[in-house]
Each structure stands twice: as C-alpha cells, then as structure tokens.
Length: 144
View 1: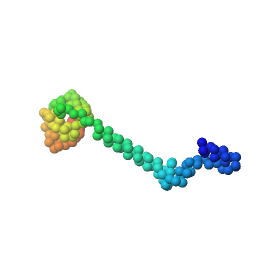
View 2: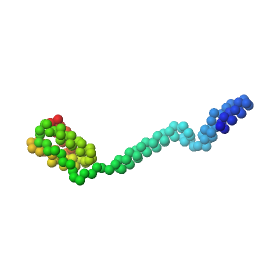
View 3: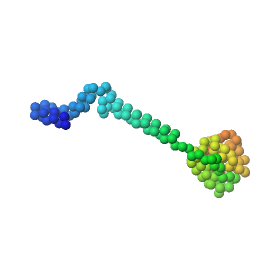
View 4: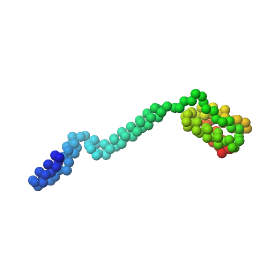
C-alpha cells in the first residue's frame, strides 16, 4: 500500500519508481548473508530442515516400541528336506522383521532349528558365532 502511494507520487513528479522500499530497508539493516533471499540464508534454512528431519526420524525410531513376545518364537525344524526350506526361510524372515530379533537371538533360533545332516554340514557356522545372514545364505545356496 505504501509502495503504491510512493510510486504514484513519483510518477507525478517524474521520479524513478522504487519497487520495494521495505526490502531495501531490510537489506540496509540486516547483516550480510541474512538478507531475505540470500544464498547463505537459503543454505541455513536447508540445513535446519535437514537437521529437523533427522531428529524427527530418530525420535520416531526410539518412540516405536519393539513388539515383545513372551518367549522367543522358534523356527520350524529343518532337517534338509528341500520342500520344507521355504517354510523355514519365510518363518525366519517374518519373525525377524516382526519382533526385530537381534543377530544373537537369530543365531540361537537357527542353532535349534537346523537339525540332522544339515546341521552336520553347517556345524562350523553354527558354533563359530557366524552372522545369521551367512548361515541363511549357506542354507539358501544348498536348498533354495
């Protein structure tokens, strides 16, 4: 409103118009880099938004409760029957995802589930505190 009035008066007097008196006044009073529309200010806002997004993600992750079962859900016994491999694998993946089992918990479940000749074949992996993913990959290679 004020800018329009100034521009109208300037037109009558033949004076060049000022497009944004408010912005010019702000530029004169604000320190360098914090002026509206400056690159530094945009970068600061971008960094602030990124930081807030990371903080939000961390809070949501901590606030999400881990589903707690009364006991560790055992996997179906696997003795080497190719037809039973899919059941064992699907049970392993589903329960790991649902109950967010830690690697040591999954290792304990695999030690119980793998039986018979298969156990003999991968015994070295079961007793060496291998990663559960390595054991599952070895089983997948043989039976998948």
